[in-house]
Length: 291
Image (cartoon, rainbow, N blue to C red; front, side, top):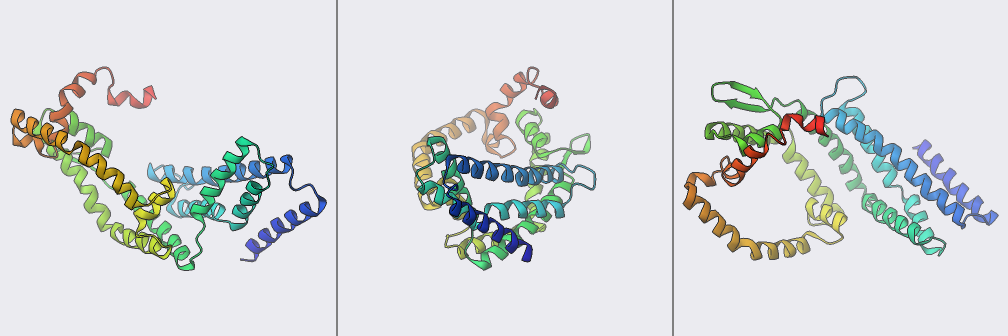
């Protein structure tokens, strides 16, 4: 706490000294502020991303761990939630010094910082607990033995992407269903490893901040309007496409039988033959090499 207070006081004194010297509100000082924010955020974001992908992909080595993932995420969110940084952003926006490009950048800063700053202490504490639980769940999911019991092959370990691709392209319904069951097992696994508790904590945090639930909180932050407005938009989409989808479903089951609408059959019945014909040109096993 003393270290944080010292850093904040140092920044405050620096701004005060600059203001008294008459050099604070200049284009050069604004450039410096924007560069400092970008450089600082790049550092904490890169550290978090490295830990995120290192733990998600199960990379070996002591440099990747759930503890370090939580730590780097905490540092990134702490950087984005510093109120003095938002205050300085707003001050620059009101200064009439920023050009058009700088104004766009400052408005991005303003919106981003505003999304992370929480006035409710209970919500802040919950966010820390949520980060820890998210890390634990992600680690467990990364270590999950995922795959399918294929006919004649026994259990074959596959990623979720491989399972989905097999469901879309395999000519064997038995194999498609086995891959579907493999995909479905993810839901039971995450529910047994803390996901329901995570949902409750996220909703509780959002309500402390004045939102209906966590989804409302995320939609409002990302889109600038609440989930009620989002569902108004989506309802129009549903109403405008419901008859078309119903007709397409009826035509599919009439042509290929009721079994075509089963979840493990639907993708294949709609696109399986096309996927199979395209596979020689875009084989999945060559994806990384081509990328």
